[in-house]
Length: 284
Image 1 (cartoon, rainbow, N blue to C red):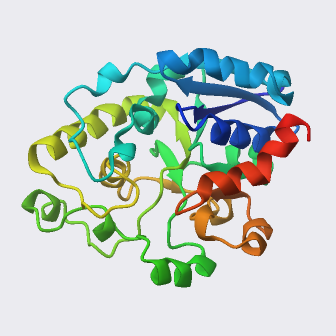
Image 2: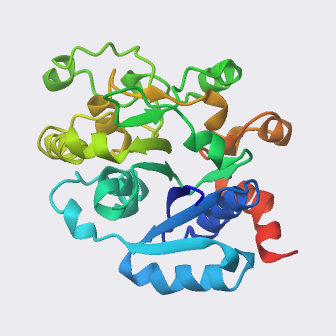
């Protein structure tokens, strides 16, 4: 029997169209045996089901998984300036082994992605022994360097951690270290559980509540910063063509030339996602 490829995507209230567009882009570019785990909060579960059953996506294999936001109680520091980054589903990636039980290897994707390549290739990413996850480094794709500089987007640890805090300096991580964006993850569940990755991430969430450790200007939100700490120097790499950031600021020509996964970011992301993918889902 062909191996199942588990793909985890969240579907939040107000972002259902983006999640469905992402799922459609995966489904339309592969013949692999993909099993989608679509994660939502209790009140969104009926909406997710309707979105799928009323479109061409009724043909996909999927499971709807409810995420209980109570696991985050006391672990998130309020941020009045960027409340959207504190939505519970932003932290689903921390809890993959608790949500997905029967798979050794799992792909996690943010909902603001468009997949242009065969997801089988991403799933075939090799993880080095002892590594619980693979990411694409933000500095690996030369064509994005000038864009990152010109629009002020972050691609180093300095943009995510507050180096004025002694706790951060004590980590011994250079502020110029290239960051990674955990919007595309290939994870090894056995290693994740063995290394107690979820507990480590929760610890750094709690430390932030107590000490306010993360940069107030960061673009990825508090979900990114603990992962940068926990996985520093301990992750495998994904081909950078599988994770091109800043969809919202790429031109249409840049968007469709040579990329495997396009990851959202910046103004206009949702509109661009819907324009790119929803017509094929809805059959227009």
